[in-house]
Length: 466
Image (cartoon, rainbow, N blue to C red):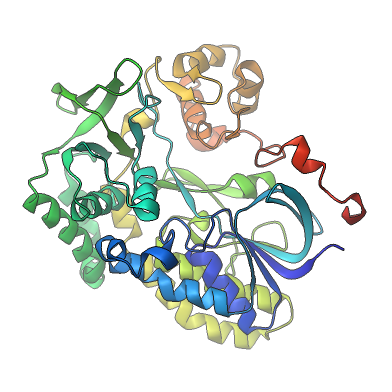
């Protein structure tokens, strides 16, 4: 017998948890599907088990703030299903998922995508070597198992996340060999237009300044104006090479390199559902087009959290609450006037949380080489294709991303273009002298996540939607 819910939520981060809590208050039947073993998402990963420990103390108050939200999710009456992958959504809405090696389809009145963001793919020569990973991946290891590298780490990138991770790492007893700051010079000039916003949200700004002070007290070496990177080594990372905007460069011995060039919304699912998307020039990424309640161009599909646009944990929570009100309104659980009244303070909070976003986007743009990697840089890790391979294929007329996919297999691997899509679009835009927004991304084909024949064979055909 197929299970049925008023709403199926994908993701149990700040947005998904807040939406589930809000929907249950309106009496809706909710299923929360989560790939992780426990709620929290990336920002509050493993918060239930880690927050009460010494590790929770070193991760900071922002991390521990997720604990009461996770507990409220557990208590609200929503069905929470962890360690579950959704691999297809079809109109109806029917959500196909795999859990513990078995396939199931559930029917939903509406679907809320709260799948957050991913780190911006930022390929450089040698980024596939063992010893090179992203800051986000290193932070996962710190949160889930308190893994601290035994050797000093190099961090390359800019923005709040590298600062936060380095501060957390130092508190945990780790060491930072150096910080390759990739933000361009003139930060104070780019921040001037947002001075009033900075003053109005000084509490948030002071957190970042506090992390910087921790780095200074620890004597962390900061190398400014880094525009390009290369990781060198035989079989694993041995040497780091970098070049600054003024042309200076250097080589440093390195065993661990962590890179980060910002976040982009996770749009794989919304693109698979053929929702409308718009190019965000300030954040150099695509995001779904949503109405005031978070509903996408496909009726019945909603998006909340950083998947709707990068804003951070508190903004994600507010978006989740708004989506819950919108779903309750469209489901007839709330009258329009009541929903509007309930949304006013939430929208005010969301506006405040997003006030610093333009300043952060101006201060920390991704370095230019992210969009124009060297020919020897692997850009499609699944198929081991280099930027040179893509540029060569780009000369065969004026192919778009889907033609490049057919010519080279770029985007056909397990990640389905999640890691190479932006880079390929950037290479094509430069090769054909077109705006990146016009090039677009590759089409997404089902299944959306890897699925074995053995898992598919467990599906009860009698539950197949008709």
